[in-house]
Image 1 (spheres, rainbow, N blue to C red):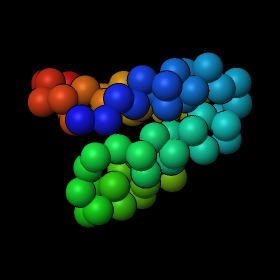
Image 2: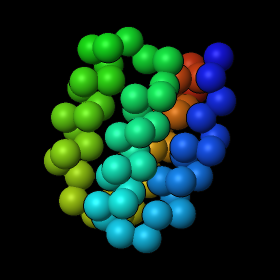
Image 3: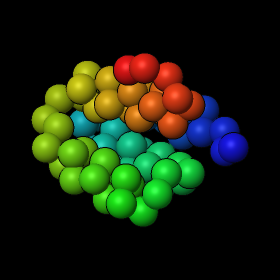
Length: 70
């Protein structure tokens, strides 16, 4: 299993919405999810319009890959 902690922290520490979205896109691409799941997450990411929601989405994305309930 891939450790995406570094990518998650880069999302959290990014200062602007655009920087957070770019870091989140990188996290999604680096994840072990199926191609369809990655495409869906990238589409959802485009609809997020606040930095806080990107942080939440990143956390939930990471936890769902671990089988955690989010």
